[in-house]
Image 1 (cartoon, rainbow, N blue to C red):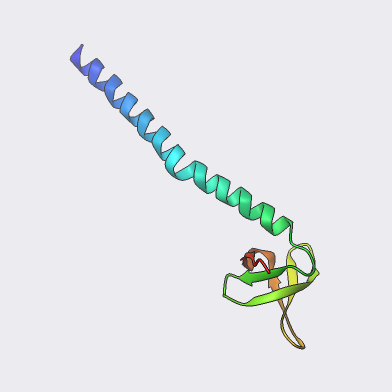
Image 2 (tube, rainbow, N blue to C red):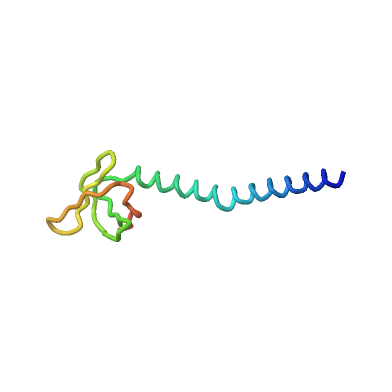
Length: 90
């Protein structure tokens, strides 16, 4: 009988640990990814962005998976949407 109680106790602790990991690690990461996907989906021409590499510029063209960004006078670069760090508030 004591071995059975020990097994049940171990399973309970394992389930509690899995639940704790879900709420402390997995769930916040899912929410952060959802927020990032919404931000990338809402990019429009004229938005000011900062890339993951640190470039700051204004979007001049939006395509399915890429953006054209004006970073200086007569200088435009093409970046992948996944390379956008965040929208910069003007």
